Length: 165
Image: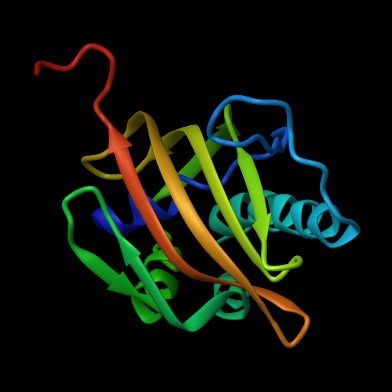
């Protein structure tokens, strides 16, 4: 299985609570209606991402990945939209139990830019790569012509808890 498919699994997580705070840990910033609408839309897109990966729904990834999408994986290698879609179509891998423990969504630019971060966990069934995984991600979304598209993502798979340093 491709390492990039593992990377696609990171932001897949249902039942997450979105939060917003500033970097100083102070109380949340008062959000505009555009901010709240953006948070809700991006939270839904992240939840749908999980279902789309489980069902290998490449139409979803084609729709949400901007033509100029740029991704970076934990090895510092980069990938583009075409590779994201190709990896999502890999039917040799089965993703299960997707969950996000720390999804945070911040909205900027009067509701036109969103940054999503999270810690996620999942189970993978794939030749040579089966097991439980976790990772962190940061994604940048831009609202273009009324639709949210992911334009950049950075994905890091964390080492299993019992692995050697």
